[in-house]
Length: 137
Image (tube, rainbow, N blue to C red; front, side, top):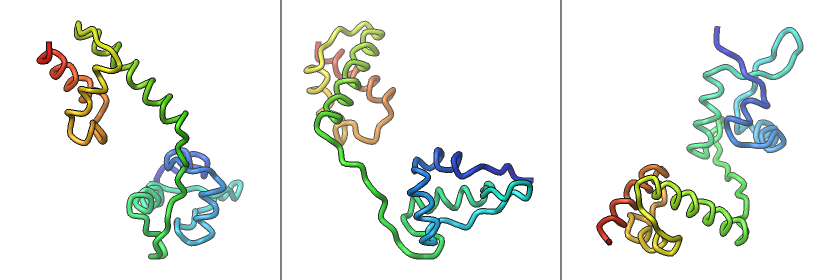
C-alpha cells in the first residue's frame, strides 16, 4: 500500500501554505484527496503527490485549466541580505581552496559565469570562482 501523507506534509513538499493549497483544491487545480477512514482527514498517496508536483511544474491544473502561482515580492533589503550571505559563504568556501578574496572580487568574477551563475548549484559556482580567481592572480 502507498504511503499516505497529510495536507500539511504535502504543503511542505510543495512549498505552499495550507490556505493557498485549499484554495487551489477548491478551484479544481489539485486532485481531490482520499480520506483516512479512521479520522476522515484528507490524505494523499504517492500518485496524487506526483500529480500535485506536476501541476506546480506545468501550471496546468488536474482540471486542465491554467493557473498562475502567487509570487512573493522581493524587497530590496531582503535581496541585498541574501546576496551578502551568499558572498560571505563563498569567501569562506574559497578560503578552503587557499584563496583570499573580497566580495567585490567575487562579484566581478561572477559576471564571467554564464547568466551570472543563475541556475547553477552553489558548489559548482564556488569551483568555477576558484578557477577564475586562481587564473587572475
